[in-house]
Image (cartoon, rainbow, N blue to C red; front, side, top):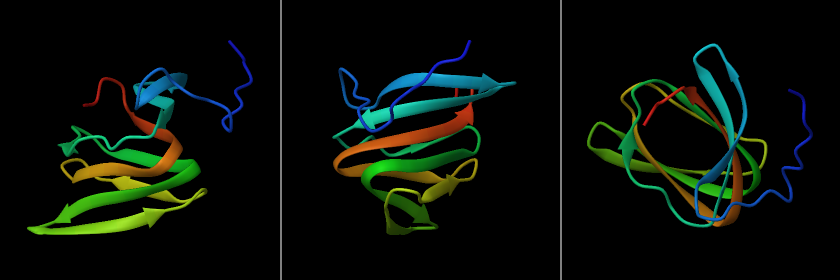
Length: 104
């Protein structure tokens, strides 16, 4: 199935609502819209965040130290399996998330 998706105007009914863009083997590609932080979590596989619109403060832990990286459109954050992290949008954000199907 082919479709066209305008990422600049995409919204969802709730924070972190998503549209499945596609699936490649056991990997999903989803477009998320949010205006609220997610929650601290650890994925059971690697995860890539690509900021398409807006800004995101990505909080993550290195050992016991919490760090923050501001992501602007076009920037990517990659979390390894087991990396604790949480995304805090700055206003509205649209983020492409690539991760293992069924990952938490």
